[in-house]
Image (tube, rainbow, N blue to C red; front, side):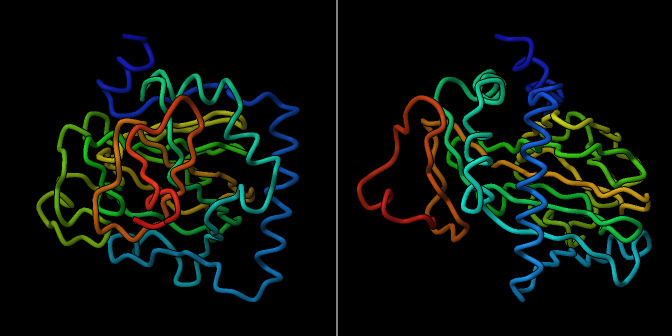
Length: 257
C-alpha cells in the first residue's frame, strides 16, 4: 500500500502538495476567472450560499459563494487539468488504476462575505455501491483559515453512512459532537489538491479576508464501483484513468443516475 493510500485510509483525507506548478496554476486561474465572468454575465442564479442554521452565527445574511458545475464544459484548460499526470497519480494511489469523473464544481468565496459551509458528509448526494467516492479540491488560490479554507474531522470517515448529515443539522447528536469550530483547519497553497473520503465530515468558515478564495472540487470514484440506482445528480462517467468496468450502453447515454 502506498503512503498516500495508507494516510488516506487512516485519516479520511490527504493533502497533495504542488500537484500543479505555478505556470499551470496561472493558466488555470485565467480560465477560472473567465468562467466567473461568464457566470455573472449570464443572469442565472449563481450564488450557492448554503444558508444552513448551523452557520447562521458565523456568516452574514448576504454572504456569497459563486458556483457552477463542470468547469470542463467551459474550458479545455480545465479538461486538461483533470487529465494531468500528477493529479491522476495521486487519485490512483487512493482509488486504484481506474478513476472515473463524476462531476466538478467551481467555488469562489469573495472577500469579506464569502459564505460558510456547515459540517456535513457527501455520501447522501451520490452514494456508490462500494463507497469509493471521494473529492479532490484543486486550489487555484491560497486557502487560509481567514479565507474560509476546508475544515475536517480526521478519522470521521469511519462513521460510515450516517443519516441527517447533509448540513442541515437533522442529526442533532452528531451535529453536537462535531461542531465546525472544533474541526481541523486545512490550509493550502495554489496548486495543492485536498482529497477526502465522502464520509469525512467537512465544512468551512466564511471568508473574512481581503482575498478571493478560488477552488474547483473534483468528484471521483473507482472504475469497479457505480453510483446507486435512483440517484439524480450529474454523473459524467468520464474515464480519466484505466477502465470503467460497470458502464453499460444505456448508462453511457445518460449523465444522470
